[in-house]
Image (cartoon, rainbow, N blue to C red; front, side, top):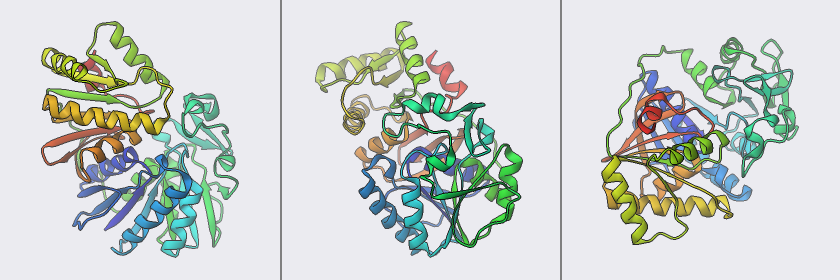
Length: 362
């Protein structure tokens, strides 16, 4: 068994989708782990949404649970642009797992996210000059990977010699660099990073077996819980064109629910989004989760698409869903999963929307 520990739900789902594509069985758990016979066990700690002390405690607890299952190797899924408590969690996991060294490769060259000469680029632009600078919880202020990792990691090129201990961050200007790194590292390391690196590690022993397939059942609920600028523009443009957009209410009322039911009946789909709010991110997430629970109960919808990892985790927890299996990978990072009668597709806020969803809501 391979174990993956992710700091948010969309990252965990991305790993589940990659495992599915390689023909491996996978199960994803939200926080606590139950018995599993899956080839790949994936756990979302949701630690990126917690205060630092609680995030570290949660990471230690889950890592101990994973260690007790004796996986062949462990992968720490981090945010590809290094938001969250990356260094603190890595150090905690190294201690629990007894690993003197950790290697992190957060670049995703397949998605235009590269690390060159110690600088992080998104589609050729330094990351602190992109929309990631406006993240409400972890704004990216530097393009220097060393600064992003609190100067706790040594930056190395794929040809450089490797140290016996400590944290190493890898340079990767292209997919070839990612493959080269994957071929050099063994189980003496705690391996960490983004989707490209995990994919390259799996490729050492298996070939991709499954092609993408898309299923969208109606009625359909699309929940946009991201602060990403491009998505805000998409939602507002759709609303202005008379699309099936409904704003998250400040207070959930029967009148609001009735309006939502009528919209769902007339269009067979709803896009629920945040208009404007001065509340903190954690408060908004919880309000969104309660609203979605009531909306699903009232409309009977069984197919949801959730954008934003912390939002997705809050909603699934509110619905008492703790265990998911991937059934389709729409595209990288956009994964449809099942839990009982419900199907949930989750996506990081910064990843592009799949064409099939754009067609449904345009």
